[in-house]
Image (cartoon, rainbow, N blue to C red; front, side, top):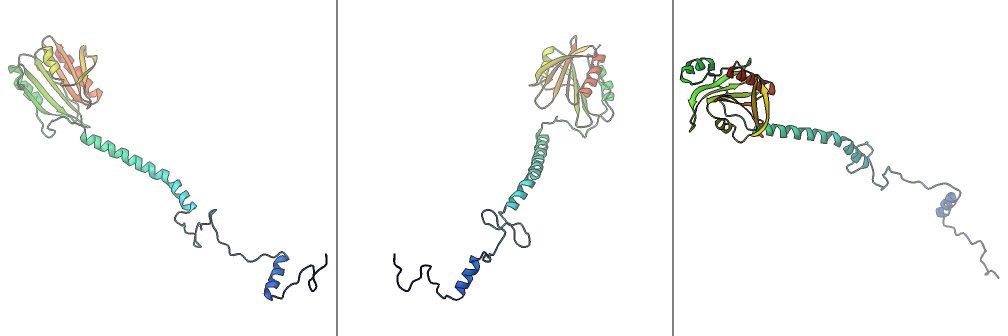
Length: 234
């Protein structure tokens, strides 16, 4: 093939000044200057020059994840404490006068002659007091009963009611409590009834005399009162 007149096969370089000079420089292997910024894989800067964590950056997300476990744990503990506090506040408490103090032993001595049965008079633990003691007929009951109420430490409460009556009278004193078990203490059998609010009724009797112990107290405390009731019923 014949070349066109005036044209070289390798092409003619036009004189474009600095453009051609720059092209030759790059062709020899030098790289053009590049302005570089630290960026994430998506091209978003992770931190500024002062190394301050930028909102939405991976560093911020990682920091939040690492610290969220402690925060959640603290919130859970506070929530549990709040629930416990609410339960303690709304839990039913025995309707007793914790400020009043009476000498139940003296009242028992004064009432002995008016009763047709021997009155039970227990010894109470150290730190306990009696806030009520009376020999009376309560409400529409056909029976006169000897009643004592005791206030103890750690929000404990125990009452003892005794009457010369029938087993039906004793069963009526336990309200809506459910029969749970029968135990033998001090030689006497006690039928135990329990309620959902942790109240217990211990019922026992000998002949035509029945005793009902009502308590919100530790098992050891209730057991100590039951032993004295059993001993004095003999």
